[in-house]
Image (cartoon, rainbow, N blue to C red; front, side, top):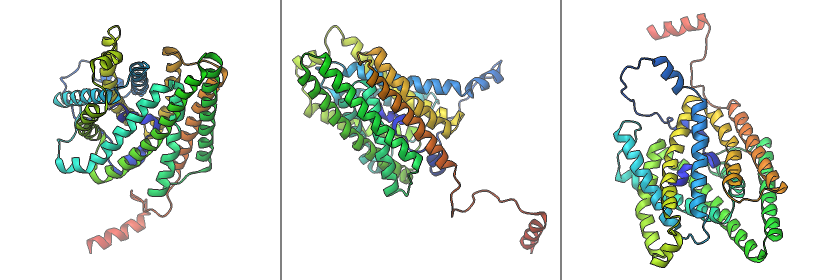
Amino acid sequence: MAEDKKTDDYTIEMDKLDKENKSFEPAPIHRSRSPHPSHNNALASNPILPVISYCGSSILMTVMNKYVLSGTEFNLNFFLLLVQSIVCIITIQTCKSCNIITYRDFNSAEARKWFPISVLLIGMIYTGSKALQYLSIPVYTIFKNLTIILIAYGEVLWFGGSVTGLTLFSFGLMVLSSIIAAWADIKHAVESSTDATSKVSTLNAGYIWMLINCFCTSSYVLGMRKRIKLTNFKDFDTMYYNNLLSIPLLIVFSACVEDWSSANIARNFPPANRNGIAFAMILSGLSSVFISYTSAWCVRVTSSTTYSMVGALNKLPIALSGLIFFDAPVTFPSVSAIVVGFVSGIVYAVAKIKQNAKPRIGTLPTVHVPVSASSQSVRDGLRSS
């Protein structure tokens, strides 16, 4: 599903997960002997390729979703999520059959434990799609940073986390960038539109959906972190159960809530753009798989620290994609909001890197502590006695 998706906005700290839950390792692939094995190994371990792939898949998913939702008449959001989930399940099952990836087989006991997380995921992605429908990509990306604040204080309350001074400073920049973005959006709507009241009401609807999405997203991420400890899921285990359990719920929601009359279908899929919209829906589902795989690849080839920095730096090209591919207003306030939001992401990543680099007080060492030769001889003597 599309934001299973999007770990760059509100990821759980990867080095914490690596300690509690082993990082993703792809299934071993039996390859025939290559005439240039050293060249292939160098290419696979090159950190530039996974970083570019991760950024590209993030931009692709955001742009495809915005393309589908950009029509003012589109209202089949649950159906969009259903298509993405089905595409995701088909893709990862095909990759598993080809021994490209691996994940657990379905287990009803694990499904019951994970079902509440899938419900939260549907709420997160649905509210995110509604917000993206009313807001531009730059504003959506900037406001998405506010989720980090909710998650951080949720970790303080429920997981014993802490917030440093530099982290607080990054939070202040995130709030400031959101205020600037909202002011720039409303200012542009009032000055450039003849029907300013209607435009502002549309933006207000987007802000409300964005606020709801921030709470849904933080609930999903914090709940998923707790469930991962209970189930010991890895990356594609999470993706498999999230999408598989979401499909029946999305079928029910789409059938009961959304309008499936022929007139409404024609409005959502106009003949001139029908094929393009269908292709974008499928491609957005595929991009969610790419994001999951490339994020795991990025951590495996580089490090959790590099991954967190890439997630922060990735905000800028995603925001710029809205200016390039869509009619997002390019004004001094809007560009300033993007820059401040970009800086806030970098400051937050640096703050987390410094926080994780500090030694933990009161914890036992997990490696052998060097001892003198005399002490070692005493230990050997005690073992032999």
